[in-house]
Every structure is written in C-alpha cells, then in structure tokens.
Image (cartoon, rainbow, N blue to C red; front, side, top):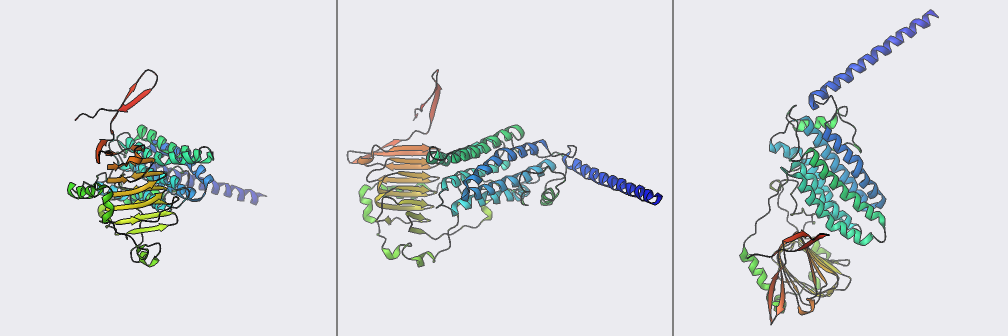
Length: 478
C-alpha cells in the first residue's frame, strides 16, 4: 500500500512539472507574439475585423454559391482563397513595418495570382449557363487590390462594385421571377463589397495601416506568418496559400494618334458603299469548317481587363500573340484577335445566332442578315456594319468604335467605352441608346442624304424637387 502511495506522489509531481513546462512554453510563445504585434499576444483589431467579414458576408456568399453548385460554386471557392490571401497580407502588415515598394510588389503576388485565376476561370467558361454570375465576380474581384491603393482605397472598391452590378442586374432580370436562389446569391455577393468599403473606412481610410514597430516586412516574414498558427486567431476557412499580392498599374494607354482613327472612321462614313471593298470569306477559309486552320496558331489565352488596374506589373509579362479567330461555335460567331483586317464578313446568319467580337483592333466587320445579338468587347479602332439585330448590340471596355446600322436594332448599350459613333438608318431611329461610364459618344442621324451628329450627354445635374431627386442632362457649354 505504501509503495502504491509513493508511486502516486511521483506521478503527481511529474504531471505538475509537465504542466509547468507547458505553461512556460505557452507564455514564451505569447511573449514572442507580443514583440511582433504589440497587443498582448493577440492579433491586431483590424485583422479581427477582417475575420468578422470573412465569417459573415463572405461565408454567406459561399453558402449561396454552394446551393447553385457547378461553375458558381467552383468560382466562389477561388474567391474564398483570394480573401484568405488578403488576410495573410493584413496579418503581415499588422506585425511588420512597410518595406520598399518593390518588396511590397513581391508580397502582393499571391493576391494578384488569385485575382488572375478567378478572371481566367470566367474566360475559360464563356459557354457556361452561369456566365453572368462568373462575369459579375470577375469584373469586381480586382477590388481586393485596394490594399495597394492610396490615399482613397474605399472609392476604388466602390468602382469595382459598380462594375459587378452591370452583370448582377442581368442575373436579377433572368431569375427574379423564377428562382429566388439567384437573387439571394446576388445580394450576398454585393454585400461583401459594401462591408469591405465600411471596413476600409473604419480601419484604412487613407490606405493600408502598417505596424510602426517590428521588423521590416519581407518574404521571410510572410512565410513566418503563414507557418505560425499560435499567434493568429483561426481564420474561417483553411489558411491561405503562401506568397504575396499585386502592383496595380492605374495608367491607361494613350491614343495612338488621330490619323489612323480617321482612316478607319472614313470607311464607315461611306454608308452602303462600304460593302464594295469587303472580301467574301469562302467555306475553305472558315475555321469552324476547317479544324486544321485552328491548329496553325497558339491557343487563345484569357484576357486581362484594361479598365481595371492590373494586378501584376505588365512590364514583367511578355506580349502574347494570339491566332485570329473567325468561326461559328454552336450558335455563337467568334471574331477574336483580328488586326488590321478591313474585309471581314459574316454571311448566312440565323435568328438564334449571336456574335461575340473580342480584342479586335483597326479592323472592320460586316454581318449580313438577321442575328440575335452582337457584343463588342475590348476592341480598339473597330468598325461594325450590320443589317438587323432583334435583341441588343453591346459595346464594353472598348475605344474608338464605329457602328453602322443598315436595318433595325431595338437597343444599343455602351459601357465603359471611350469614343463610340453610331450611324442609324431610317428604320432604326426608334433605337434606344443606353450608356454608362462612357465618353465621346455620338449618334449620327440620316438627314437629306447625309448624317447629322448629335452628342450623347456625359454630364448630369441632380436636384431635390421637394419629394424626389430629379436628374437631367447638364447643358454643354461650348
């Protein structure tokens, strides 16, 4: 019995000593965090606030995306990973002093890569039934670049949020009366950016707040952040991948000169005579009837949007050469990467077909017959002549566009475009022109055998009339 009692005493002493060692080790770890964070071993308040955003609106968005499944669910997981990469950067900033600009660029690389991955997924899935969902996310995800914007990151996020609403409005139009799950998805996604704006306003009004103490941030300190779980409160989903976020180049490319633009516009001013110089594309030249033609060029890579700051520095990435495309894919005519081609023609169109024109420069296309809709995306110095469209003609993210309507079209939409001239026919004078975030827009109306030009208002004035806001175009003072 005495032997048993002695054994118990030794066990109790051993347990007491182990507990003491564990306590000392834990305090030591906490002190190390104190030295880095300077807040009693806890994470910075603005990281905690970001965690609340992750656990709140981002988690809700993931839940609704999982309900919709498919491409939307996959895309949402990429969004989650991008927010986790941003959380890692915020933890680093709370622990370290701001480094040199080139070092910041390296640390921003992981966020940049996540943004690019999200945008590439949209481009690879243009045939998806959820393409408007994917576009809403891809157009606005560069908002995570606020972390490199100073002195006003909040308005930048709002601008990206506005870019999303162009596509979320389409989702609402398609599903608001048939499937409320999509309406919930839209609300949850837009709520992320609204809450992020509020977060920035509270914690980073004039730009990201770096620590005033601790070491200067480096790739090594980022790796330390990613591997030291004891100093961080557990993030909602799994930890973010290692690395860093983006350099956002806000400079826009200047116009290449008015001479080349005038030459292109002069072609459209010929009216119906423009068709005399067009070359007919025979069956043996159409890529959809000759797969071997497609094999002659490299695969098409997804684009980087020019209207938003680029997540990575363009100086580091070589110029990509793409094979020009003019083919019918299912019910979609694809016209892509055409350069200096003023004799492009699409014949034998059908009412259910659509045309998507992407990254075409200094070129002219004629579409004969009646078609459902036409989209011009990321084009420069591009001319379009078409007979009849039963749906809509859209111009997005483009510059110096000339459109001539030979027959009828109900609606033309111009969004984020600089320079768009539309020549209407007598039959299309009832066409509605919808514009947003665009400039230098002119509508040309046929009068006495010629065209008279009318500018589309770019400035508006709003006043309170006692019961509601009244908005009208501002007078253009010449």
